Length: 284
Ligand SMILES: Cc1ncc(COP(=O)(O)O)c(C=O)c1O
Image 1 (cartoon, rainbow, N blue to C red):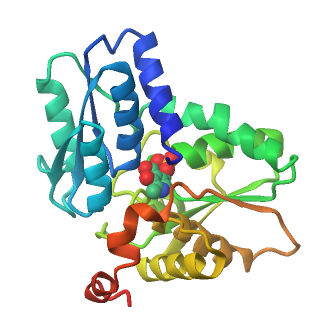
Image 2 (cartoon, rainbow, N blue to C red; image 1 turned 90 degrees about the horizontal axis):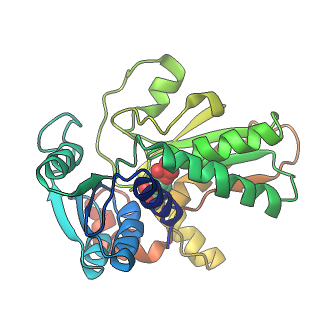
């Protein structure tokens, strides 16, 4: 289960309603895993085929989960420019173009993604917090979560601050503050957040601030929280927590902070809880 399951459902429902996805069709997506799992579950239930492309860095557990649901997984090299024909984006587009009856779910640019968070995640947060939200912190992969939730919360209360935790290596921080890429994109190990291109599901109008979080901070906090709080969260969740802790230094009064924990840590056992891997990557 992850925050992307509801997005996958909205994307498939939208495509069916518009007649863009027909019985027996094939879902194609470039996914770091979680959207793929959501789509794979729906494909299994509704009788679609599914093909997913992802960079090598995606954990083996996530790749195997997709195969477990019956999907085909195509692994592409890490750290390749988005426009490069070998990138997971380019390979997904090519597969979609060459596969009859396919639907390219296009999670980075498909507005069914952002709208789903506007229609469901935002209202759920508002209701569960009884309207007492001062700050919402989340990472941006497609940007659907932070944009959809941010739009909803700001419509309810324009004083709610929306903050994005962005991995070192992602270009989003530079684009937000400088309107251009000043530090070239670099590969990093936290999955699902940060970008090397600008996704149309992300709208900076609903974001107030960005906080940089590096791999070391995210992975070490991830282990710490699991062992101290009994919460086995994923690295992108720990990145949000690290971002919230950094940002909270700017807060002038006690505040209600909502974090998006997008998935759980059991998907990353070979990374977060694997000391040799962490040592090899210079994190431990
Ligand atoms: C683990 C994880 N965290 C965070 C996100 C970011 O969510 P969004 O795509 O809505 O920006 C994703 C998206 O795939 C994810 O897989």
